[in-house]
Image (cartoon, rainbow, N blue to C red; front, top):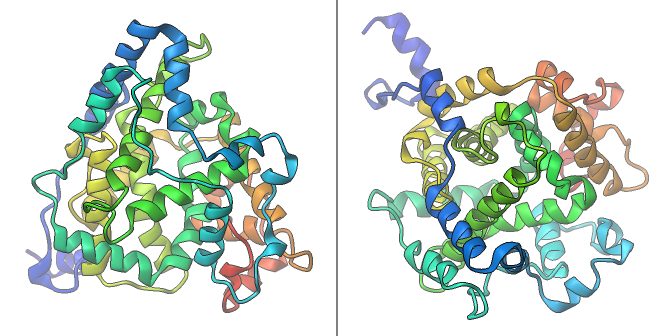
Length: 385
């Protein structure tokens, strides 16, 4: 081991003896993963279709997206799709605002499959209610503590970094673009994502009283149902790979785990490697429960870096889908700004975090004078997801 090599590796480890081995990820491996989905979830949805046809698949989708009655009744009310910024107190933190918004939207994961659904769905939920043997409960607990420590910053990074990071993957963005779920109801879709993150990062999420398994199973089956609809839509290009394939799911997992850690460093908050890798481990467990192959779930920060770099190199390019999704996201953020705030702040934050090359792919407006405001304290709390 040369001195030069050690210096190159130092950012990933606090001491030389903590340097960890790194698995190799190859383009050929990821090409295979682009044609690979989540077989157990796909089989459950296929069974529903065989037994009850498209009506049964629609019934499953309705269950997976179900909210409490008041929220369902208000879905056609345009006022429900606007961020209720001025209903919140100025002293609220970012995370408190999101938790209030989630409660107001009546989002919940508590409901189990009922008898009206085909038995295959109940069997799927029952079969996927345990942690993998390699799950480290101590590391998961530390990962939850990491989330609570940086919760306001992490929720900001979810909107300004993680989501547009995903949209930069041109082929993977197509399924979101075709479904139009993000464009038609951006604010509520973003709240749903924030709700999932808040749910699986609870200290007791995967304990007897937690909703972690339910949340992961619902999202996993939602992905499989969307994959089913997309493949039957007649609008999917096979050159994009399978909808919501293993490579895209691995990239999304990195967007929820490694990318926010990188984002914290960009805003001058530098968590140490031990707590960062505990957070990475928590999302390794969550990724496994969402149906991602173990070989695509990083063991440490260096593996996350190498896998992310390869996925970006293979997938990031300009696309109509990525530009449209990013515009919808920015429009939602701008709508949540206080009236006196400069409207280009969210775009400047995105451009700063993503870098100019990726920001240009997504059509993010050029930086202006308000970029200097990002250096001010608490600017990240001015706008919401």
